[in-house]
Structure formats: C-alpha cells, structure tokens
Length: 475
Image (cartoon, rainbow, N blue to C red; front, side, top):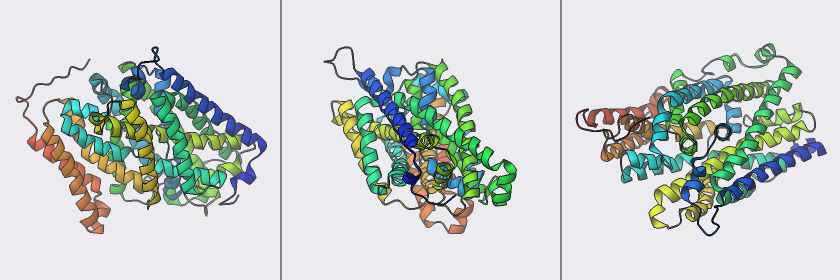
C-alpha cells in the first residue's frame, strides 16, 4: 500500500454508482424533511418551534440516529489522534465521553426536558435571566462554529475530487447551507437517518476486512510503538485527564440539548442516550482499530489521512464507494448540526429582538456562520486535537458548573453571579494560556484553572439555602 494516492484512479464504476446512490438517498431524505416542514395552512409562516425543533415530535429511532450521527464529524481528527497516540484516542474520545453520557441520562435529562426551552442559551435565560442568556449565547456560538468540520469537508473533497481545500470548503458549505436553510431541523434529522446507517456500516466494514487481511492484536503489537497501547499514549496524566473534564461538556452540549428539547418525552431522551452510548462504543472500537491498522500498514502517511487512504486500498470495488460515502456522511452529519445550531444561536438567542421573522433571519445566519467558519479555517493552525481541546476547554470551564448548579437549585445563583463566574473563568484561562510558564502549563492545563475559578466564585457567593425558592418542579 502507498501512503498517498489519487483516489480517482482507484475508483471502479461500481464505486461511483454506490457513492452517488448514497448521496441521492441522503438528498431525498433531506427533501422529505423539508416537505414535512410545510404547515397545513400554506399561508401561515413556519413557526420557530417547528423549524428549530421539529415541533418536539422526535421519536426514539430518529432521536438515536440524529444524536449518534452528530458526534463524529471530525473523523480525520480522530484518525490523527489514534495514528499518533494509539488507544489514547479510545480513552480520551471514547471512555470519558461514555461516562458523561450516562451521567446525562440518569441525572441531567429530567431537568433539561422540564424547562421546555428552544436552545441552551434560552434555558440559561430561564435559569438566570436575559443578560446571562447573551453571555451563554456567545460562548455557545464560538463553540458551535463548525470550523473543524468545514475543514474536514474541504480535505475530503480535495482527496476524492482533487479540488483545493479552500474550494472544497466553499462548495461544501454552500451545499449543506442550502438544505439546512430550506428544511430546518427536519431536513437534518431525516438525512441523519441515512448518514447514520452508512457511517456505521462503513467503519464496521473496514475493521472486519482489516482483521481478515492482517490478523488481530499480534499484528498490531508487532508493527506499532509500545506507547500506542498505553492509556496516556506518551502524554502526561494531567493532559490525559483534562479530556475527562472536557467530556463533561456533554452535560451542557448544545447539540445534545437540541435533541432533548426536540424529543417527544423524557422516556425518549433517556432510552435514546443509553442506546446511543452503546452504538458509540462499538463505533469507536471500529474507528480506533481501523486507524491502528492504518498506522501499522502506512506509517509514513499523513496522520489525519492515513485511515482514509488505507481503507481505499483495502476494500474491493463497490465497497470502496460505500466507504467514501460513509466518510462523507460522518462529516456532513456533524457539519449540518453545528452549522444549524450556531445559526440558531446567532439569529434566535443574540438577534431575535432585531428581526421579526426568526426563521428568515436563521436562514441568513446559516450562510453568515458558514462564511465565518471558512475564514477561520483558512487561518487555522495546529491539529484537530488542539482545536477541540481549546474550544471544549473554554466552553466547559465557563458554563458547565453554573448551568448544572442552576438546574439543580434554580434561584440560588443570581444572574450577576453567573456572568461574573463565566467571564472570570474565561479571562483567567486566557491569562494562564498566554502568560504562564510552559513548564506550568504542561502540568496544569488552562481548563483546570478556569473551572476552579468558576467553582470557587459560585460556591462562595451563591445564595444560602434559606434565601431562595426553586420555581422548577421535576416530574
């Protein structure tokens, strides 16, 4: 096998047939969702609830499909981490997150559903007030900008069709933006059903073919560095464990909350998260195994692209096209959700008092968010790992503690205290990142500093147990 190749020369006519069949089916599903969005009275405008949350009618199968599909758009980043650090990827991008998902299902879901909010910042408004909503909205907006995912799409189109990465990002973002703007959340959900199916079968297929072609664990141990089978992958324990805290962002993740707000009931949410966690576990096993085989067979390949090139050469005609469609599905299913949520945050949470028609302003916002994401991606430096770690650290450290405490004891944290704790956390993290000696940062990540500041402020200045009355009843 070769470390770099022209994908087009490897494609058989059967691959093109399968690839475009999957694309057509996905587009048809998105169009079906857009058609379902139409109201019975064609003269009435589409309501924000229907456009943003599918009228809160998300059933269990749809909930699982859209939730699972939304989580893996940075597939090249996951491959990069596995290529460089081995099973460290499964620990930091898998095990830590499963624990967070289970915490969400058993301890957070009931509280989230009780608020019947439209967005995470909207929930923050209910908990703390309108100024707190704006602060949470800005953190959410930057966290949900699909920078890594539009970059992944540009890389994909470059590897498959030979387009420049920039051209791929522009064309890809325009295509995704059109169906998001037209059909809203319904188009995303119904297209996710197809993408969920294709992406899961694709990674399973690569894992099984790899096992058959090269053997099991013995082959990997003979051809990989010993550190690839270490929990830390050669990283420090402090930098490994910080991913565990970043994973707690799932407890307040906007895409998680969007699905919960859209679900028919609490039972759908709980069962859906548990089923999704089991699927995520199997999916991560397959992607980690496939990336380990790619490192063993193509050690000179670019870390983020090795899995892709390895799989293209491993699979037979027809299945190659299915795999490539699966990779595209993985990227698109996250890109569209992040793009839609970021545009919701801009149009609904930050600007809704300036525009009468929320749906129309959301559609415009989709292309504004897309353009901003492309511009940031063009200036991007560092790896996917660093992008996720930085954005995830700020979002989690600044919002995790106040929002969870606010849900547990509504009224005990004032709006002013929420704002002070969030902004102070961000400010101190930034100081630590740019001013602290490098040796200190190796042992204490900025996240630890930020969340500590937030926690100390909230615990010291929250209202006493006798000073507040909770206004939320959990059923």
